Length: 142
Image (cartoon, rainbow, N blue to C red; front, side, top):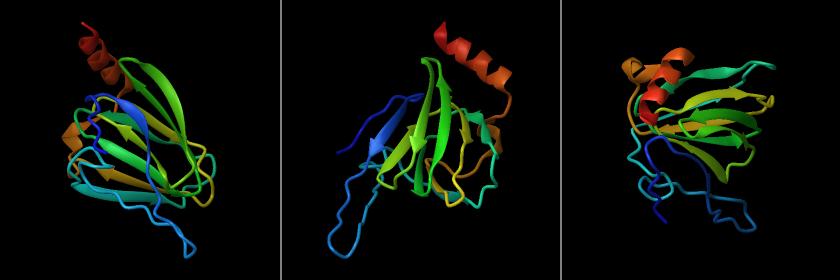
């Protein structure tokens, strides 16, 4: 079930569960459920109440975010507009291609947010200024 999203695409992904009477299991493989080669995995947890995170985009990094426990909201913006996505199940992920501005909010006290990335950490790939992001976005529209 491979998918081929565009570079700046944002889309929700649904993962199949292989559960039975013992519990649930979800397996994720690169180029199948995860539409890129996996080079880095990190997770965010114990986020304090009313904290917002993110406030950046990436030049080319692709990511899939999954709330393994609890919930949070992603507000995202691409050259095609803005949208909000509630992540509240380990069977749902949010794919974000490059040049996607992201802000995360409304973390539940038990939220564990897993992020799967297409590249290792590279500070040079970050766009930390919203104005710089808007400028790059306008270049795409030309």
